[in-house]
Amino acid sequence: MATFTVVVADPESGTTHQLSAEEQDANRFAGKEIGDEVPGSAVGLDGYTLEITGGSDDAGRPMREDVAGPNLKEVLMREEGVGYKPARDGQRKRVTVRGREVSDAVAQINAKITERGDESVAELLGLETEADGDDAEAEA
Image (cartoon, one colour):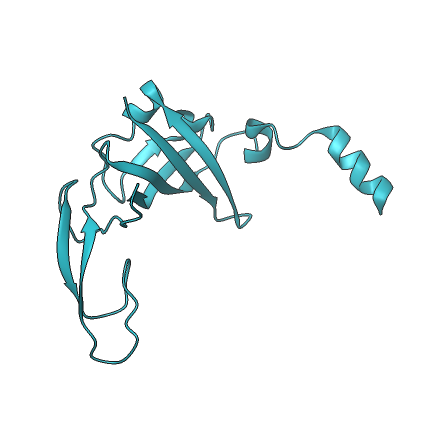
């Protein structure tokens, strides 16, 4: 079974959270492509909807939206983009990247929140408690 590290970005607050999806929850990501939406309950964010924005495999090869399928492909890169930053104008390089489809070979998935639920992300992940707020006020 697949296990993914899912990095969830919250555009509203500007924070990110590293979560894991294992077994049945990981199956919700399998076969999806960059740009597809997944229910947030797969990573413990009930009521939220996540959009897959990218990812990488164990070797650090990035997923690219313009490469079809889940397999590796060597792409001749001419401009700055995911997986390549040229040192000078006109420089080209052949780079191995992974396709836009999520498979077992993908280790990390990047996603962003597109639809929000009733509770905050911090409450669902157990990061926010009333005691934390009291300690912060006492230190100030």
